[in-house]
Length: 380
Image (cartoon, rainbow, N blue to C red; front, side, top):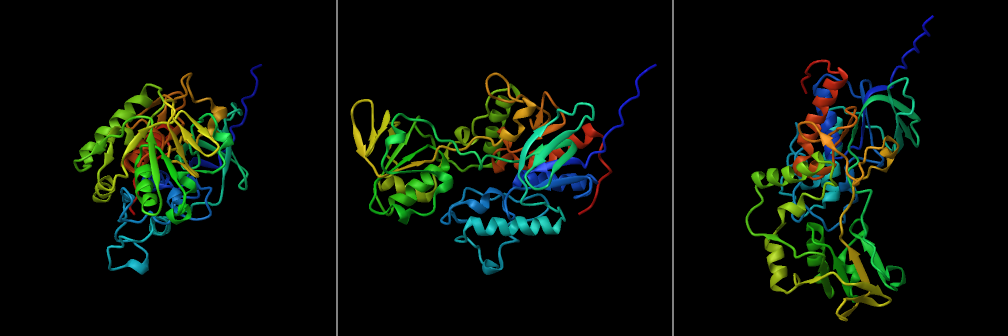
C-alpha cells in the first residue's frame, strides 16, 4: 500500500517582501499591479518604525541639494510630493531624512501597500521540505510561511569597516558614515577620512570647513568631469550585473561610475581638501602611520568605507558560493540561480537607486510567473 501523501500546508502569503526602501516599495507596487492584494496575497515587512527606508537615518546635513539623486518611485513623482513646509519651493535645503520618508509614507498610503512595521526578519529557512514553503521567523510577527521571497534589505544595516592593525588602541574616536551627525562635533580635532566614494568626499568637504582633515583611499579616486547621464548609469549597472551573474561579490556601482565632480567639490579641490594620500599602514594611539614612517596625529577616524549586503538572515538557505558571492540570474539578475523562489533586490546592480525600480518591476514579474500567482493586471 502506498503511503498517504502529506496534506500541503497553506501559506500565510504567496510572497513576502522584506524591506520597504526604494526596491521593496517598487516590488510591492508591481506585485499590486499584477493583481496581488497587499496584506492578503503578499506582505511587506520593514524593521524601521516608520517609512523612509535607509533615508530616515541619513545625517541632517544631507539635503536635497547635496544628495546624489532621489529617484521617483514608480507611479508617483518625488518633486510633487515634498513636505508641506517646502511646497511651492524647490526644497533644495530640506534634509533628505525629512523629505524622502515623507514621500515614501505618502506612497505607501496612496497605493495601500499595508507595510507591517516594525518587524525584523531574524532568519529564513526551508527546513520544512515537505511543505515546500519558506519560513521567515520574525521578532514580533511570528513565523511567516510563504511560497516566494523578495528580499530588499539593502546595505544600510551592514556597515563595513576594514581591519587595520592598532585600531583597538586608538585613543580617539572612530565612527562609520552611518553614525555621522554633523561636522561641528569635530571642531578643533584632526579628522582622517577613509574612503573613496561619494559619501567620503561629501563629508570630507563638509568637515574640512570647520577643522583640519586628511583624506586616504586604497586606490587613486577617479573623478568624473562629464555629467552622469542615464546611459552612463546603465553601463555601470551592466558591469556589476555581469559580476553577480558569474557568482562574484558584486562590488559597487560607484566604483564603476567614478565620482561626479560637482561645483562644491571643485571648490573643495581649490581649497586643497581633495589632496588624497594612500592608505596608512597601521593605527597608533594618537594617529595613523604609513609604511614609510610618516605619521599624522589625529583625534578622529571616519570610516567612509561603504556597506555590505545585509543578508545574514538568509544564511540557512546557503545561497553563497565558495567565493562569497551569490550567483544571480533573470532579466535584471535579481533571481537566485539556485532557488528561483528567491529574488534579491538591493543586491549587486540594484544596490543603488539607478537599478532599484527596474529590479523591483522585473522581480515581481518573474516571481509571480514562477509561482503562477499572477491574477491579472490592475490599475492604480
